[in-house]
Image (tube, rainbow, N blue to C red):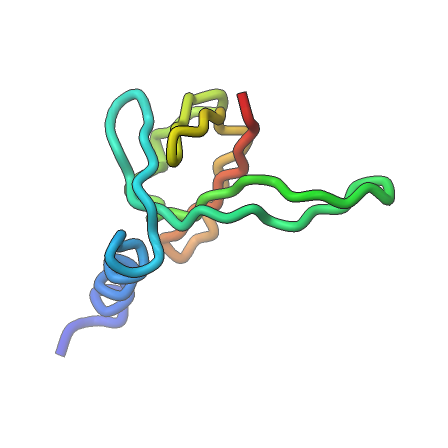
Length: 96
């Protein structure tokens, strides 16, 4: 039986599969499979949504703030890239 870390890494691979929940996200240096969502946000009593992706940290740890991203033909830039310590990173995006 493998370690818990090995099990989690296998589970993340399944979770971020385009056959399951993920979509293909294109950066200048290649593609990454990630969960794409429009998260609800509220600032100063104004509600809206913000595009975010969640991906395996190993796939996006080198993506810099301001990096260009394309998802389903829509262009964005990386506004934040936050690893959560479990092997998953959450990236907030801004439309170009």
